[in-house]
Amino acid sequence: MKIIRLLLLVLVTMTVCSASAKKYPEIKFEKTTIDFGVFSQDDPVQKCVFKFTNTGKGKLVINYVHASCGCTVAEFPKDFISPGASGEIVVTYNGTGRMPGRFKKHVQVFTNCKNDLTRIFIQGEMSALKKDVLDKKQGK
Image (cartoon, rainbow, N blue to C red; front, top):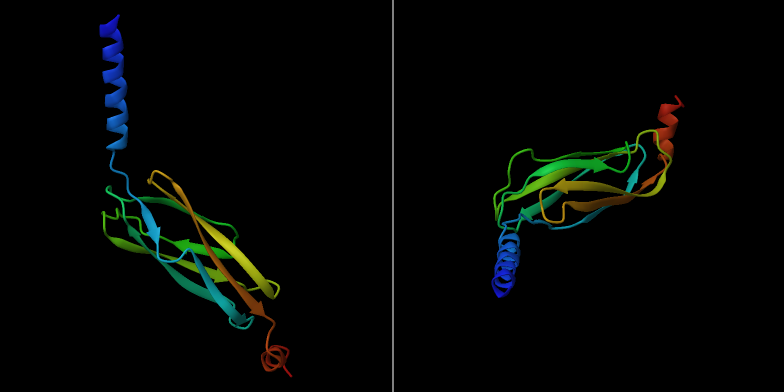
C-alpha cells in the first residue's frame, strides 16, 4: 500500500513539474489602447501600429485577429516571433459613411500563449465635415 502511495506521489509530482516546465510565449504590448483624438469626417481613414514583444520562452504565433466591427481591419505577422523578438499589428479604422461622434473599437488577438486571447483598443472622435469641404461636395 505504501508503494502505491509513493508511486502516485511521484507520478503527480512529475506531472506538475512537466506542466510548469513548458515553455510558453507571452505577448506584451507597448500600449493596449491608441487614441486617434479628433479627426474630420473628410479624412475618415485612420491607421495606427500596436508594437509588441514576445517576453516568454517559446515561439509566439498569432493565429488570428478579429475586429469588433467591419470598419476596423488589422494586419498581423504570419511568422513565428522568437523569444525576445518584436512585431507589430497595424490597425486601420475606416469611418467612411459612418456618423460623426466618439467611438471605441477592439481587436481580439488570438495566440498560442497560455492566455490565448488579448484585446487591444482604438478610440477617437470623428467630427462632422468642415463647411468648405461640404460646400465643395455639394457643388457650391
